[in-house]
Image (cartoon, rainbow over all chains, first blue to last red; front, side, top):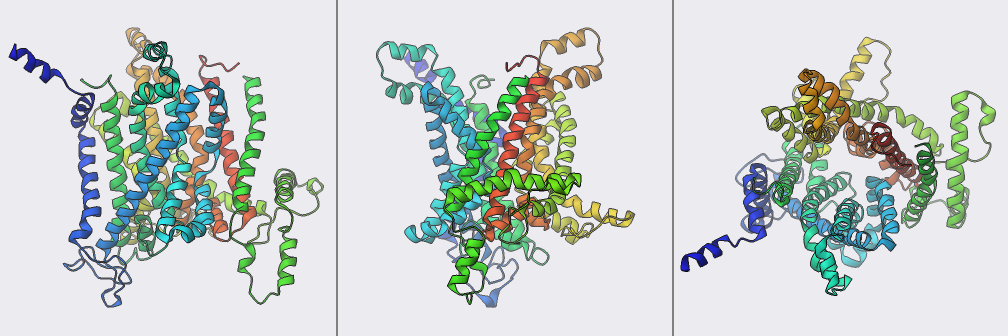
Length: 302
Length: 336
């Protein structure tokens, strides 16, 4: 008797445990996760261990190479590059995750509503098409030119720019998620379990979060990782073009664009932040790849 | 098929009108003032006169309609006149003038277009031509060493931003090895072999940067599509009938797997124009992307407006092209 209970408890595994088991077998994804966790840890915990201010100008110590005092050297104004890289990483990661969350929320909402309610489907899908046809980078550039000053005046420079960039990126990137979620919802709502829920009198507003949402979650998660990678890239591109954060905020994109002027003499200054952007995006993409495999029940268990 | 195409072409017009209006209203909110570049010593009434001369005094809907008329009627007539040599085709009167340079926007675009077409078009061509064999061979030997390498390359192409690959290539090939120039010289005229060689050398780096991105995206699609087809019954039939592997892969599978790939290539066409903004900035290519960014900095509303609408038109148009191609190539898909 006791043996049987033990067997039962052993057999009881959650879905997420299965997903993790499958995820672990994807070498690239596991590696990506370790790299991403390291970057996260260094950017957010690093300043506690390396408390050098990123914007302190020290002309006497400018353009230094690698040393114990400055592990990655200093820039043309003598600012510590290691501290600036950590600061840039914090901004990039915060912008990336915030933009990802907002864009996923918008995309999921639009996708769920247009998949579920035929009445608004046409309108919402035309809207999605319209947004897909809008030229993204120009639009982002115009948006950041337009609203930078008003938002900075209300929320302060740092928070204002952050809000602006997050809003601009997510407003121009939710369409993919919306389409994926809509197509999932369209097939799900015809399934038997939804019919069963309806037949026992579950109202629509309860069916959507309780029965539909958990089933589209896997597509949303894959979409979310890709979105975060894109958001970090877009933010860096904006900063690189000088339309992101103001100069005193050392985002990775801006560090690259500042470093390019000194490429000949101090190549590390442009290459390092560029390398960090690439490494972050690459690791997130690999995590997304692993998640896609792990969340697909057809692949899982093989 | 024809009715579908015509209907979609017809639908393009309202879509583009809405997009143009959206961009116009967005620019309308812009705090940037084209007058801010002028010296402060200009008296206020002259300033007002200048604003009126630029047509800034009218209400927004008048200006939008005027822009629309200039964009859709006057400028095309001038282009047509220049193309055919018949001067009387061109409509008399004001033209769509850039605030920044005081010359017609169409002329600016025509000046910048060749550089963009050469660099971006060539990189798209190179990326596609490389992506096809890589994708096909990766799929044929799935999980082989070449496939693993191909996946890594396409992952890298997705993840490395052009403002990282660009400086790395400049550093290695221009500064350390000294093979190629760092800056694209648009004044260079190709007249003999040596200047042609210079032109080739200065194009290699920007084309390489842009090709990597295209290569990554297209090779992934080719691989997925060929993999899909390799598992189909007709492949087994072809092999059973004694076709050589070469014929099976390059005739039977390839033709069928090209259907989605062709649409992806068509869809990617317009994004290359906007994607070139950063690369053009990096290598100082004075193409369309650079024109857009300098116009945004200078609050040059007519140029930004015109370029954005052209980009949007390209996206909408190539969406249509992709759909039509899909219907033409795949007999299972019929729109009517």
